[in-house]
Each structure stands twice: as C-alpha cells, then as structure tokens.
Image (cartoon, rainbow, N blue to C red; front, side, top):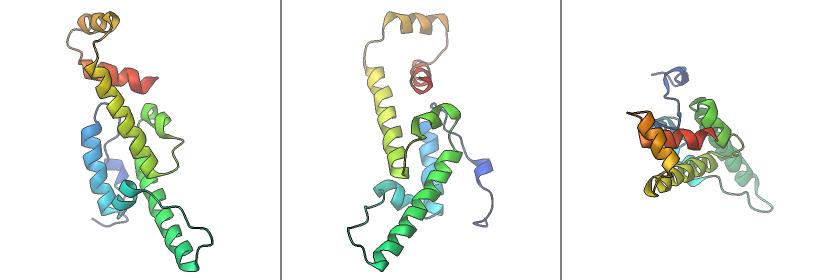
Length: 139
C-alpha cells in the first residue's frame, strides 16, 4: 500500500459498541503511520529556554500527535466525537476513552435499577452492555 493512499475510507468508526476492535485497528494504523509512541506516551512539555534542536524535535512530535488526532477524528461517530472533541492531544483522547470504558464496566458491576431491568425485559434480546453503552455515550 502506498503511504499516500486514502485509507480513512476503510476504517472502522467507533460508535461506543465496537471499542475493542476499534482499538486494535487504531494501534495498527498508529504503528503504520509511526505515531504509536506519541499516542501511548504523549508529548513532553517543551523546557524553559529550549535550544533550537529541542524546538525542532518538539515541533516534529507535535506534528505526529496532530496526525494521530486526525486519524482518531476520522474514526468516530458524532456521539463519541462530542466526548473527545476538546482534547488537545491523542494521549488525552485515549485517556478519555479508557476512562469512559472503565466507567461503563463499573456500571455493569452494580445492580441495575429496575427501570433498566424493565427496559431489558421489554426489548427482549437487547444486550445490557449495549444499552448501557448507548446511554453512556448519548448523554
């Protein structure tokens, strides 16, 4: 594949229900685009009175972070995008999504209020995780 090809047309869109598959796909994309380390570790703050070499290196790292943010933004549905739109770095997006996923898991460990149980019974085959995920990402 030519690195200039438009691969975004073939990417999975995170919709709140497919996060495990989306994360795996994004790791591959980030590795391919040479930004995985930036996504995982973030961008270090430029020191006070940086040298020219430090400024240039920081600019390159920020450029890679923007590239990662671009791919993240391309792979979000509108509901999920609203939750990360104000993030200023790819690391911040990953932290936000991880926190939200942990919050959903925590909700699953709690006893459900009866209105959620009734909703699940009324909808028959609805998956509880999907319902909570939808409720969480919509609000």
